[in-house]
Length: 220
Picture 1 (cartoon, rainbow, N blue to C red):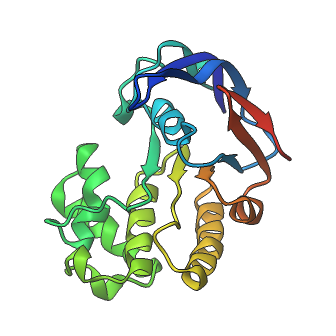
Picture 2 (picture 1 turned 90 degrees about the vertical axis):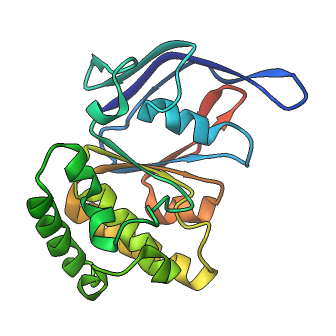
C-alpha cells in the first residue's frame, strides 16, 4: 500500500513566489479501496504530487513508501508504478503494437516475445486489427485504450492517472470511464486518479481527497 510520510515540496511560480505543494504531508492508502481520487483545481500541484509518487519529481523532504519500504530515492523503473498522462504520451514513431510492448522491452524482454504479449492484449482491447498502424491514425478513444494497455501490460502494482479523460468529448469520456473501471478491476491493480472533476471521481473512486494548502483533506 502507498504511504506518504512527512512529504515536503516547495514550488516557485512564474511571479517568483514560493508555495507548498506538500507541507509535511502524511497520508496512507485506505486498505478497503482499490481506486482513490485526488481532486483540486488546476495549478494546485496535483500533477507534481503524482510525479513525486512516480519518482519523476524529486521531493524536498519526507518519504514515499510502499508496504512500509521507502521508495523516495528509487528510480521510477524500479517502483513498479505506471503513469498515464492526460495527453496519452504515445510514441508517434512507434506502431500501436510497439507502443504497448515498450514497457516490456524496457524490462529486458526480447522483441518477439514483447510484441506477442502486446498483440494478445490489444486483441482483448478490441484493437487487434490496429497493431501495425501508427498511433496518429487512431481516434481519441482508441489512443486512450492503447495508453491503458501500455500501462497495464507491465502488471503495475499502482496505476497513476493524471486527468486521463480530459482530452475526450463528454460522451466518450463517460464510456471510457466505465471501460477503465472494468479493465482495471480485471487487472487487479490499485489506481490513484488525479482529476478536477468531482463527478468523475465519484464514478470511479471509493474514496477521495482534495489537495489544499499543502495538505490532503478527505472528501469521502
